[in-house]
Length: 300
Figure 1: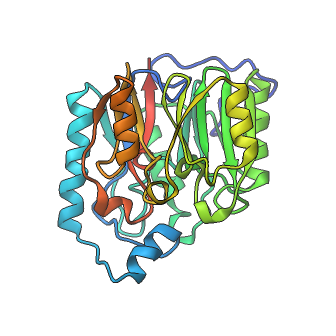
Figure 2 (figure 1 turned 90 degrees about the horizontal axis):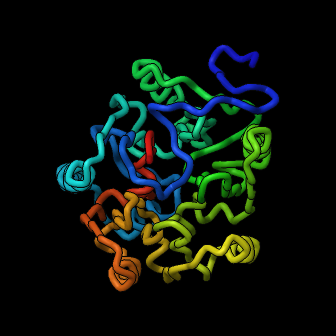
């Protein structure tokens, strides 16, 4: 441990946190970090927002705020304590708190953002963790790394996509080395940068169950999911490009799903899961859904 901001033990064996931390994407969600909507607006830095902007659609902040509050009501209704990043006018995409850090069993990792208008978000998220006295596991320094590509699939197993842009191989490999020192399996999957983040194509819904757009997911990902005995709910390409895979497992067989995610909603209902489905379409058209806005801080 030679970094001022790192509690990570160089050779592994870092002690897990007790009040904070997660070991999977599907344990019961207790504490969540959400970005602010105050300065959010659509930017043309991803294929989803460009498509809607080029079609002549217009962003409406008042509608977005109402939808954002509907999403927050779901968290509160389900007993989740919600925390917020500070709003800063120069950080319009900090609403997507998934990306600027990722939580681990040993504390958060501070990301290294790709897009120019997001590169200052590391400071805002570091300020949050400092004020909450949440110790940092480590900080990515070797390359780009964003949380939308990173998932704790189950205890001991990480999936991390990398397109060469928002997460590149150098950033991914640095984090991979940290997890492997702690005895975890870490699977890196290369994908096309058109799809922004891995959580556009694949997100865990419940234990051993994932929402996946098989039409675009790399064959290596599908093969790996099968090897881990993870069942798939297949999401059509058109819905996936409107963030139809981008959902949050609340744990205990409950899921938070955008109302436009019709296939996933129906499939989850058919499997007996409890579905909460607020309309957040004014936000998803900017390129991120409920999973992008959610950084789990504590799961059972």
